[in-house]
Amino acid sequence: MIAWVNGAFGSGKTTLANALRPHWPEALMYDPEQVGYLLREIVPVPTGDFQDLPLWRRQVVDLAVGLVAEYRRPLLVPMTLVDPGYHAEIFDGLRDRGLDVHHFFLKVSPQVLTERIDSRVHAPDDPEQEAEIRSWCKGKIAQCVAAADSLPGDTVFLDGELPIGELVDQVLARVRTGNDGDR
Image (cartoon, rainbow, N blue to C red; front, top):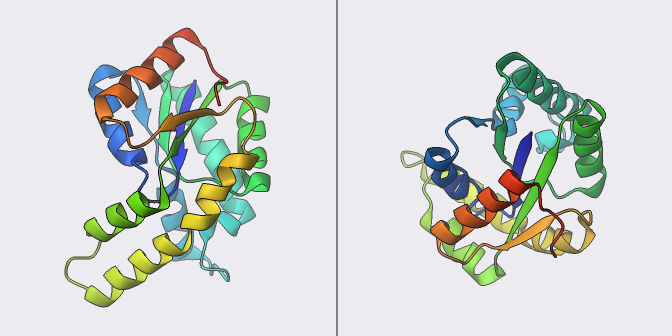
């Protein structure tokens, strides 16, 4: 089983995934972004977004399937994935290979996303890189917010501005009962 926590940059995906870990210790944390970082070291990424690489999308599926098969444990995946074609390619690929996918999307207002992005530090020793990262994340806010309207019907929308404990309870209730589909 996979619990994919989706949402805009700054929506709280990683925070929620980290908060879930003590309550769901059998789940492995799988961050497809690491696959993108690896590929970016090997091949050029003309668009600047490794999600645009077909190999990234295939490797995300293959590694997820391999992790579940090898370790027989569920996966917890915090990753922004809003391109409808890429979403379908990855999620259909996972399901076609026999995995049960629970898809959660954290809805957060653009104002709060901007505040959260501005409060994070990714490159403390490199102000120029820090500014680039923040700018890139902020530049994706509109696309990520708009994506909520095009996500599949089985997506579970969560209010990403709720206290983290409430979000943990909501996700655990879904993955433990298999109850999905509330918009």
